[in-house]
Image (cartoon, rainbow, N blue to C red; front, side):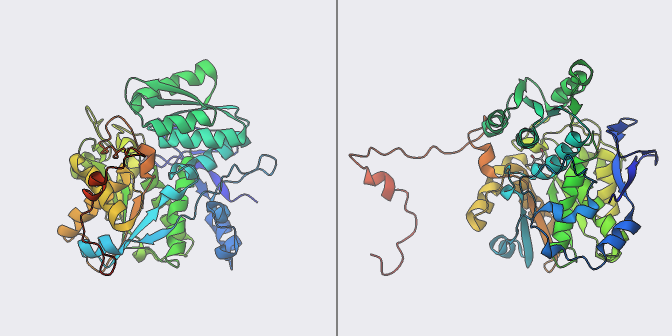
Length: 420
Ligand SMILES: Cc1ncc(COP(=O)(O)O)c(C=O)c1O
């Protein structure tokens, strides 16, 4: 049974049929619109907890998948909501959580969007998909395309972390490195649509990746017992995370599963080395100007312009949220803080959330007793060894003449009582 009504342009309300592939409308994104009355009737008495523990448990709020083609899944979704008490007590926040997307099948939240988008591409008979990527989306597309039996063409900036290039090549994608930014990669992908007849899977240029990201919002609601935290903090580049979660919350309120006055304040975090959305938010503008000369080690946030800007800014404003730029030079420190205090392998993008929470708590924008969720969008090890990483090399020991001075030199604490 289909619950999808059509595709709709949030700019002017134009609609398109959902049973054929579409990309953008007036160069802006299209979103999937559901018949929420029918969804409501189908969900009446539904118990999600009896369904498989992955994001497809919300199938009534996901696109209709033809039985013949089936879902392309690697078990994505239902990532843990981890309490971050050590960081919380340092920041004087009593209820701090990290939604840990590093535990996704491809090590990042991009698994969600690609599962839905590749499923739909295959259902529409697409054989060849292409993508500009900062890294994680490329790795995810390669994996899901391999599983679906599709050809994948991925264009990444030349200084993309090696792990992302490796994972995409391993899964059989054709990977090209471009001496430029993700926007240059996007131009090549657009040119190839006519030349090579591939389907453009770029952020917000097809309507289904956002539907996958939407499940992060649905999961948060379920994980908090069908209520929502006060504040959600998300590292933002192209904006699909913020747009998808806000769409989830609006659908849940329309379904009566969440109260309107329970909606969270959304926080988009960017590095001060690339913060087009923060500038637009602060200037009260409806869209963002391209950010000149963007520089950040958080490659997923090095997005100088995005066609999702209007929707992202709308979601922030409607939710009474805010866009925050944090200091580029402190991202490593925040990564280390999260790993050492909580044991969570936080990528540079997610680490910016800690900087934002620190700042917003100091400003009293976040209260001590509020429930705050930060996102870890990808595992830190996906960025290991990349060009601007500043990891200290580990000490190399000679196995036959172990240099104990080097080992004892690294001991900082007194040994625990009783072990001497
Ligand atoms: C790890 C990570 N975090 C955050 C983002 C930005 O997400 P969005 O495009 O949904 O704003 C990306 C995008 O590449 C990413 O890879």
